[in-house]
Image 1 (cartoon, helix red, strand yellow):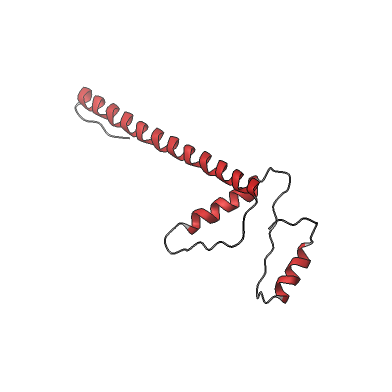
Image 2: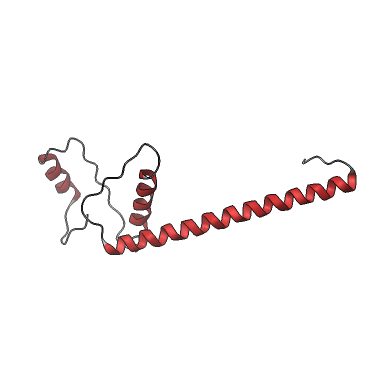
Length: 112
């Protein structure tokens, strides 16, 4: 939630409890990190919600700057994951080739 004015967390909790909320936990994010912490949290929630057994229900709208930062972080994570996977696959292929060459040279080889 974004507020146009400063709102104290203890006031938010009281208001939600008056509206019928049984349990309220208020978490805030740093305002000086360019939405990085909030976007990371949003991405974690979205990722968890896409796993089996969960259903994402969204009401309201998200700050456009936060959405943009979340998308940016998700794309970076996707690229990093693909790069890591590609590196792991290439590393495994090289290890197999090295073991095959060593086996031809010595007749047999132990991985240790």
